[in-house]
Structures are given as structure tokens and as C-alpha cells.
Amino acid sequence: GAQAIDFKSNFQWGRTTAISCPGAGAHLPDAEKGCSEVERIFINNMKLTEREAAALMGVHTIGRTRLENSGYDGWWSDPTNSRIFNNNYYISMVTKGWIPKQTTMNKHQWDRADVGRALPNHEMMLNTDLCLAFIENNPVTGAIEPLNAAIHDCCAWLDPPSNNPGFGLTDHPQITQANGGLHCGDQPVNIGFESRFKCCDAVGRNAGNQNIDCGTPFKQFGFAVNDVLDFASNEDVWLLFFKGAWGKATTNGLSGLHPLTAR
Image 1 (cartoon, helix red, strand yellow):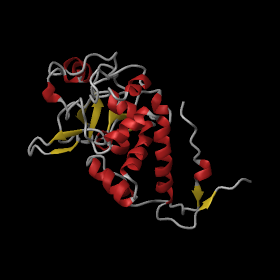
Image 2 (cartoon, one colour; image 1 turned 90 degrees about the horizontal axis):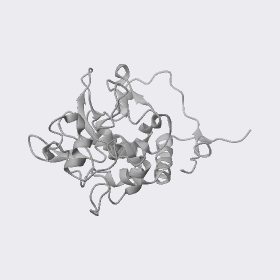
Image 3 (cartoon, helix red, strand yellow; image 1 turned 60 degrees about the vertical axis):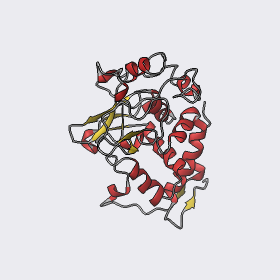
Image 4 (cartoon, one colour; image 1 turned 30 degrees about the vertical axis):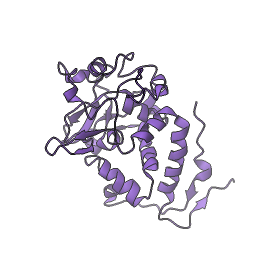
């Protein structure tokens, strides 16, 4: 298992408690806009590196979204892992299939689309999640851009491990192993057509058509895809970078903070 992460010894106190925070929402990434918001908030404003930004997004490994709070609906992982602070967020991102959905609150998210999906307790990802790993061509201009459910009507998935070096998850077999040996909710099958049918099952009769793919399932080029794969492969690596990112997030722009002392 992963090493325990020691937040307590690194925590510093001394922030001013506010009763209300008008406009605080603008200091968080707008999930509708995707990776441009990850860059604006985490990299430009908070001065995190790209790797630290990807690591901090791992907080989504626990909890869920609710329509009444954010307009989004669902969990980032399965019921068991949604209760555990682990790296399953990254594992889910690359071992499951995802298709765009518009919620009843007119927000855009990615719902799990593979044969392992379960309703009504459905799993989902936000644009700010999947854009870390996946890209797609703009349907109008053809330009390659980070994935966005409001723009791209496609299925996001990666090929399972195979005998083809560099394809899909072939160079990262430990990710599939950490997912109980499953890929898109079932035992891995041949790359391409067979895997697409399983990973994009919710698409229906067109699930085998490669035109539905977001980018290419044998290789993705999201701005933090290598970080996502590293964190999915090794929980300790994620925790190391999360700890650094969390430290910056809780101390940047503040002075006069004090470490906790034993009493």
C-alpha cells in the first residue's frame, strides 16, 4: 500500500476566518471551461507546476457532485473508492470510457460509458478532469484542443495493455492491475474495435466506429497525460506531489503562519 501522508506536521495556522466569501467562486476553476481554468487558477494564480496542478486535482478521488450545489451530478469513482483518499481518480480516468452529457442544470460533464457503468449511482468526470489526459479536434475548425463536453461529441478511452509498446496502457500494466485487472468494466480484450465496443458501450450500435473516439485511444496528448499515468501507476508518487501542491495552496500569499506544536 501507499505510505501514510503526514499533513499535520506540515500544516500552518494563522489564517483569518471569514464569515462569508463573496465572489470566492471565481477563485476556483470553472469546470465548463476545462483546462484553460486549470492553467488560470492553479498555474498562473497559485504558481503550481503542471505536475502539481494535476496532483492537486486528485482531491476529486473522494466525494461527489450534486445538482443543487454545482449543477453537476455524480461520483468521480465507484462507491468504495469514493470514500478513500487514494489515486483511484487517475486510475478511473484512464481505465474507463466516458461520453459527454448535459445535466438538467445545463452543465456539461462526462458520464461513464463502458460496460461496467452502473445507474443511478453513476460515475462522471468534469471537463477540468478529462482534459488533463484527453484531446480532440474542434468540430468546426479542426484544431486540436483539450477535451470539453460542451464542444466534443465523442467517447474518451484508452486501449488496454497489449503487445504493442507505447499503445494505450501497454507501458503501464500496473494501472490495470490496480483496477482489479479490469479495463472498461471487463477483462481486457484486443485493442481497437473490440475494446471500443466495451469502453463506449453507452453509444449503442455505433460503439465500434472509430469516428466516435476522442483523439486516439492508442495515444493521448492531454497537457498532463504523463502525470496522470504516473499518478495512476504509483500512489506514492501522487501523494508526494500532492503534499507539495497542498502546502502551496494553503500558504501562498499569506504571512505570519505558525506550525502546529505539541501541547
